[in-house]
Length: 393
Image (cartoon, rainbow, N blue to C red; front, top):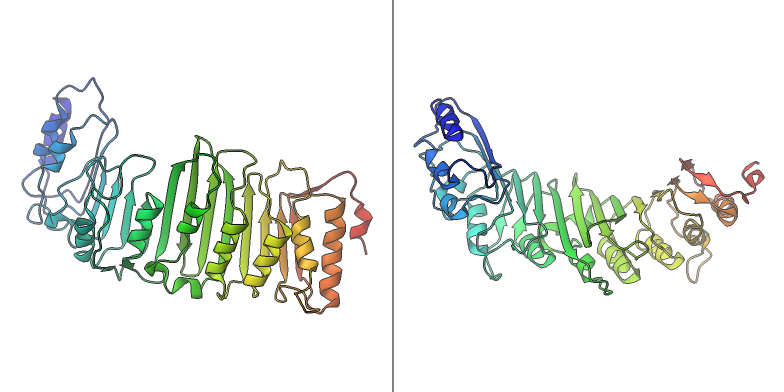
């Protein structure tokens, strides 16, 4: 009765409430059935602009909330709606004209038709989050069926977490501004079988990215170690010109990305004006000389390469890159990456071969008239066998 009394006191000032956040975290010790709580909401909340409802214990009967039918007469000024583990019926006008819509851990998700009908009534939508991470729940309650595309001209942030197939389906049917930040995360139990399809599935080949790949100036790849017996693949775009792909695995020493996936990634951005490439290793990963050469070939306008390596590795990880930077183009005496001017290395361990390779790259590129203007080693170290005099001119 304490919670019910508290809510009644709050709702007594219903005409003044502009933002309401209600999270229920009761478990077995709940003093009364939670199913009564939805019916405490007042008949009208004329000033309410943001409503956030969440249930963290898993004890709330979803059907009771699903039968609640708020409408625009009850909440005429509602702009922001955030629902976690609870939701209303999907055909209600409460979803129309929203500024932000955030849905997560939905037990009874909408159909594809219902979801896109909601979006088509939200021409002013700026934020759309829809998360169904690592659960048996899909983004939609029924198999995917063709629907008309939705245009969201004001969208600033799109964040979707679910299966790669379903997220790809959504991305193929949305049109958003070029400056919209787009994030997608896919988590699944990794079986250990060799399979690059999940990585290639999240690459920006859908309708929503139609213009993006021709403007990308910065590309980042994060290879991480992930715990919990799962593999996580994420993709993010921001500021209309930057992309980041994250591959996290739970098996130490397992390749997060192999040549096939590497090639698919680079083929996607071939022809873009990409001038900055960042590779961050947080797990053991072998990027071969052939992989580096392919990168330099597909992204010929690179001006900066930034590598941040796991500090615990023993050295030698730079050698494939240095070999690629010294290699000549096939059938030509020219070096790759003629525009490259900056090479930044962080948390790398330089062995004797790597030390001489760095000096060789600097000297060779200078002799070809395409010198490096910056070579930065930050938080890095050398093995004992390195001849440090090789760096002194």
